[in-house]
Image 1 (cartoon, one colour):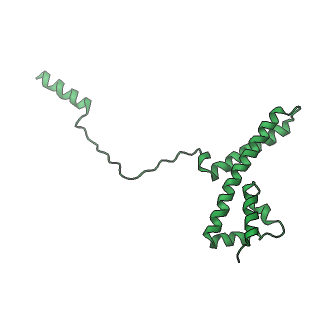
Image 2 (tube, rainbow, N blue to C red):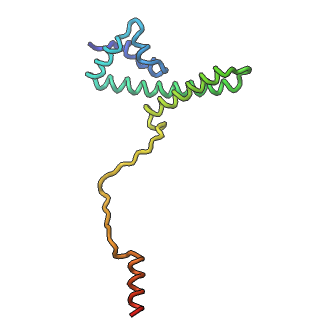
Image 3 (cartoon, rainbow, N blue to C red):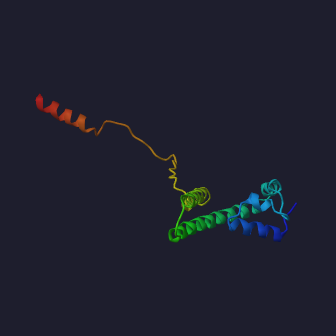
Length: 139
């Protein structure tokens, strides 16, 4: 089974606008989520397009959450529930972006390439050098 270009385009645009794939696939005229996942498993290009659209959608969600946060500053009579909701949305958008967009990932990755060599020895040990100097002065 292959997706029609208009259906694929609608899926990609909706993903880039921040809609979830589950919600998109539950609408009439779209393939079911399991069907789409099967198609993605067989088609590397489709998988890449959907992954890229999801990444762009994550940036859109982050932008929307930031806009909501900034709009809340100028709103009179803010309730605690509104602040909590916006805080949760911003936190989730930031978390999602950290998983999908490398620039937002705060994890430090150290790679060991295996070309490090260690030499263990006591040739230049300052304590041994000092002891040798002392032993030569006492005799």
